[in-house]
Length: 131
Image 1: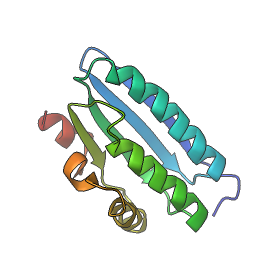
Image 2 (image 1 turned 45 degrees about the vertical axis):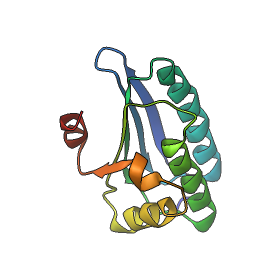
Image 3 (image 1 turned 135 degrees about the horizontal axis):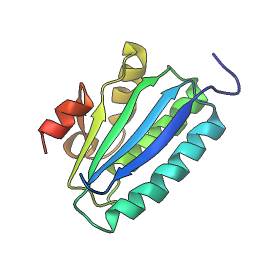
Image 4 (image 1 turned 90 degrees about the vertical axis):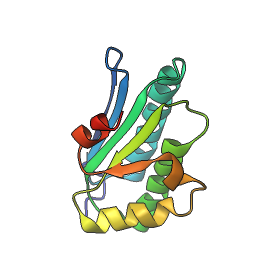
């Protein structure tokens, strides 16, 4: 596992389609996890001004994390379900790695109402079909 992290992320706000996509992949360090959460919060607050955006979290390519980084992943999952942000619907793509997916599902169980607020889907197209 990479000590410094090789994770990358982007935040894309499509104002025409009213879709906010948070993309992440690779091995994340703690610093990268914190930077992701900061950038996500900024972009989510921007979209929340309108209240009619859809959130799609595409973390399919995120690799299994160390226990310390898993804590940051839990914080990110809590952000996706946070009432601080106003989204019409919230989706998270299933992770390609079964280990990372089970880690995400396990961590999401500790977040109140996560399963009622965020829907796991296989692809971005599946999410867009549900809106």
